[in-house]
Amino acid sequence: MKKSIRETVREAIEPTVTELGYSIWDVTYSKVGADYHLEITIDSEEGIDIDDCEKVHRAIDPILDECDPIESFYYLDVSSPGIERELNTDAQIEWALGQRIEVKLFAPIDGMKSFVGELRGFDADTVTVFAAGEEKSIQRDKISKLTTLFFEG
Image 1 (tube, rainbow, N blue to C red):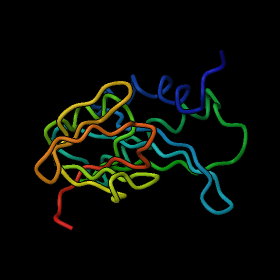
Image 2 (cartoon, rainbow, N blue to C red):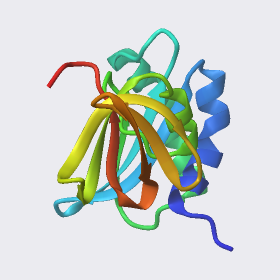
Image 3 (spheres, one colour):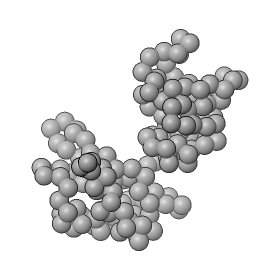
């Protein structure tokens, strides 16, 4: 089975990113307008600033040029996950256990398209959130976006 661009890129750059003292939060490859963007989101215990992003960008650019995982032209972006983070993987969801999150749904459940509460648990099929005074188990395939919340809103 052929690896995805995300997997190939992550595998190629992760040793270098780790050696520099950072971890990879996410790798995304998407079309923005007419352009393609490869976004590497990095994290560290101390947080991320613009100098960290620049350092990682300079270190991984030649690695990506050599392994050439993307045949067409693309822009390489290195960024921080920010305070409010989208949760896409099991590792990211596990990281957010006990935190305040917002769950956005594709279609309403009990008349609501989003829930804000504490992330209590998850498994392969569901995410459990304590919201509005009760625990709600929500099917993962019904969730359009799962995000940590920092600010009340």
